[in-house]
Amino acid sequence: MKITELRDYQIEFEKIRADYNSGFIVINGLRKKFTLDYPIHEIANLTKDEYVIGKGDSTFCNRIENDLNDWGNIHGSPAIKFGLYFGKYGEDKTRKYRIGRNEYGTDENIALKKILSSIVELLENKDDFDILKKNPISPMYKGKILSVYYPNDFLNIFSAKHLNYFINILGLDNDSKSELDKQALLLHYKNSDKVMKEWDVYEFSKFLYKSFGNPNDEVKEHNISKELKYFRLRDFPPIESLKFDYVDLQTNELTEPKEKRTEKETKIDYSNRSKKFKRIGDRGEQIVLRAERQFLKKNGKMDLAKLVDQISERDDSVGYDIKSYDLDGTEKLIEVKSTLRKIGKSNIFLSANELQVAENEKNYYFYIVYEVGSTRPKIWRIKSSDLLSDENIVKEPILYKLNMHTK
Image (cartoon, rainbow, N blue to C red; front, side, top):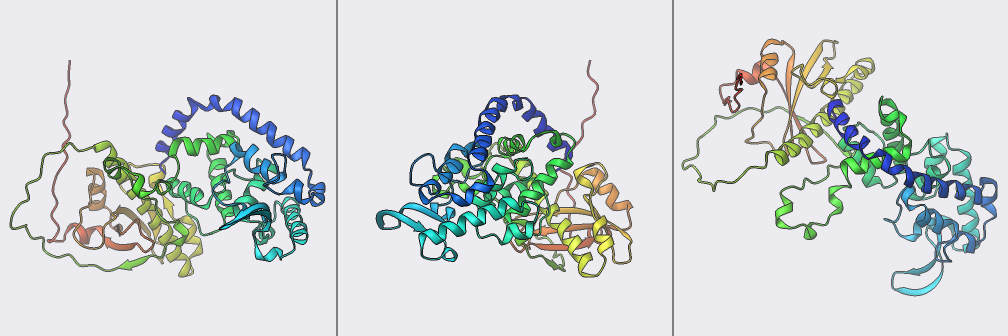
C-alpha cells in the first residue's frame, strides 16, 4: 500500500480513535482480571469443570471466548478448538465431555492434563516460535491465549482468513502459512510505521477492521443482491500460496470487429472502478515484487534480492513501480500492469509520465501480470523499447489535461 494512501486511512481513523478508549479500558480490565484469575503456574491444576466450555459462564474457555470477545473473536470455529468441551457433537445430542483432537487420546482426564500442559508450554515459551508452532493447541485458540497474556507481543487477530486479507490489502510479502508468523508480520508493519508505532495493538486491530472491513468472501454469493455483485471483488488467495509462471508472448495484429456493438448508455461509477483497478494493480505489484526476489535468490543473488525495492509505495512520480536487478547487478526499472483476464486481448493504461520514462530509460521493463486473482498468475516480461515499437500495438490517447486560469 502506498504511504500516501495509508496516511489517508490513518487520518480518518484519528477522527474516531479516541472513541475506542472507553472500550479498551473495559476489555483490558477484563483481560488483566483473567490473567490474575488464571496465573500461569496454576493453569495445570484446573479441573474439567473449571476449564471446559459448556459448564457455565465462569470457566476458562467460556471467559476467554465470550467475556474477552472484544479482545479478538474466535467464535468462527467449533468448540473442538479447546481440545476438551462439554456438549453435543453432530447428530449425537447427548451432552457430555468430548475430546476435540485425536492426539489428546480417548480419556478425558488424560486429555485435560495434556491440554493444560500445552497451554502452560505456550505461555512459558512466548519468544520461541519453533516451540509455539509445534504446540498442539489449535491455531485460533493458541493465538488468543498468547495475545491475552502478552498483549504487546501478539496481534489480537486470529483467523487465518482475516490475516491473509489484511496482508493482501497492505501489499505485504509473506512466505509462511503459520498464523503466528502472519501476526508477527502485521505487528512488524505496525511498529515500523511512524504513526502506528505509537498505537497499542488493540487500536491497530480496530484500525484494520475500520479501514478495510472483513474479507469480502465472508458474504455468501446467494446473499448478495444483483446490484451489489458489480461492486464486489473476490478476495485474493494468500500470497504465500502462489506459483508464478513467466511467459514469452507475441502480439497479433488487432482486427476490427465486423459490426460495432451498440451499447446502452450507462453511467460509469468511476470511483468504484478506480478502487477495483487499484486493488488489482496493488496485487500485481505484490506478485512481481515477490517474483523478482525469488528469481534472484534462486540464482544465488541473495544480496541483490534484498535490494529489490517497491518504489511506488513511497513515490508514485518516478514513472515506474519497482527497482530490481539483472543477475549482473544492472538496475532494472519495472512498471507493473495487471489484469484479472487470461492471456489474450487486453488493455493497459500508461500515464504521460510513465510513457516518457519508458521511452527514455534503457533498462525499463513492463511486467504484465495476467490472472492476477488466481493462484497461478502469468507474468510477461518485456522491454519497454520492444513493447512501444511493436506495430501490432495501438496507442490510443484517452485523457486530456485542460489548462485554465479563472478569475
